[in-house]
Structure formats: structure tokens, C-alpha cells
Image (cartoon, rainbow, N blue to C red; front, side, top):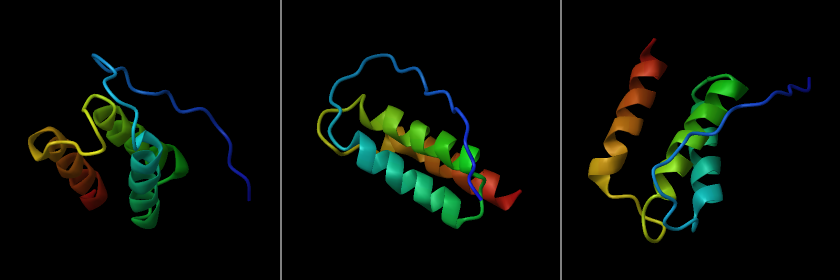
Amino acid sequence: HQERGVVAGQKVDQVVDTTAAGDSFNGAYLAAWCHGMSMADSCYWGNALAAQVIQCKGAIVPTNQINHITTAMSEVNEN
């Protein structure tokens, strides 16, 4: 089974550093996929995390900036 589609990226205020953007996308995508989300939903969460990562210097997003993503993923997974 081969699924194809287009998932829009998320707009960001300012790109600061693209270090680890791909790794972040992959990690969030795989976490969502392993929790039973669709390919499109998994891409959404990969984009959401990568969008946060590229707005910070280096490969680490401050906890106070990432909590809303992990909370939102938890809420979606519960439904």
C-alpha cells in the first residue's frame, strides 16, 4: 500500500537555525505514526516540531516553547 499526498508546512515568525530540523521532523513523525496516527497527521506533527526547532539557535528547543506540542499530541492520541 502506497499512500501519497501533500501536507502544508507551518508558517514561522523567523527562521533562526535549521540545525536538526529534519531529525526533529522524523522523530515527531515516527512518534505519531507509532501511536497509530495517519500518515497525514504524523506529517502534521513532524512539521509542528520542526517549525519550533528552526526558530531557536542550535538543535534544542526550550521546554517552555515545546510543551504545547507535546500536550496537543497527548490530547489527540487520547481521542
